Image 1 (cartoon, rainbow, N blue to C red):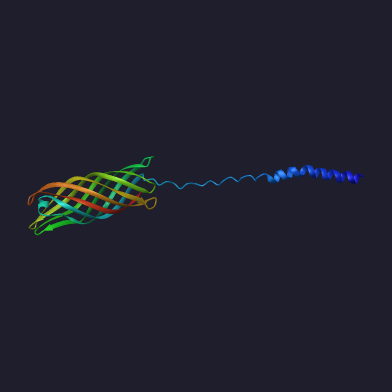
Image 2 (image 1 turned 180 degrees about the vertical axis):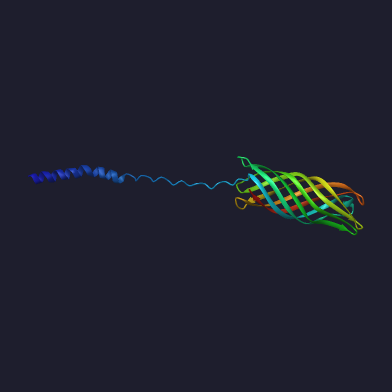
Length: 212
């Protein structure tokens, strides 16, 4: 009799415990917290930089140089230094100065013209798309132009303006590469042999910069 009571009690306990066990089994396992994924930092163009460039120029003479067909062209190379500031909305303003030298020249018989050196001081305005920076630029330009007439040479420093644009790409956090076009009008100066003469030129250049 006692054994029957014990068996009956055990069966009853199992019957009452079964629904609770089934509910525990059907309950979904607690979700594990998702691991935080850090976004890569956005590149900043703000800072000083220094660099080098090379390119090709083609232009036309002005004043008497134009009348004589002294339209210079040739290769050049030089360096630049500047500073950029990037706003939170990705607009960028900057200031750059560069100096160039090379063989931008033209000749017509005994008369020749050579732009021995030139440079600019320019503002830059751009919009940064992470590591890509398209920009426009413009400002002051100068050039040391030499004219030779029957063996007699005279050099004059010309001043004028320049305007253009380009695109720059950040290769690393410090190194950038760029392609740029400028149109430069250096005006005219008075030469003893030819009178008023000058030069205007287009330049296409490639360059690299190191950003500090």
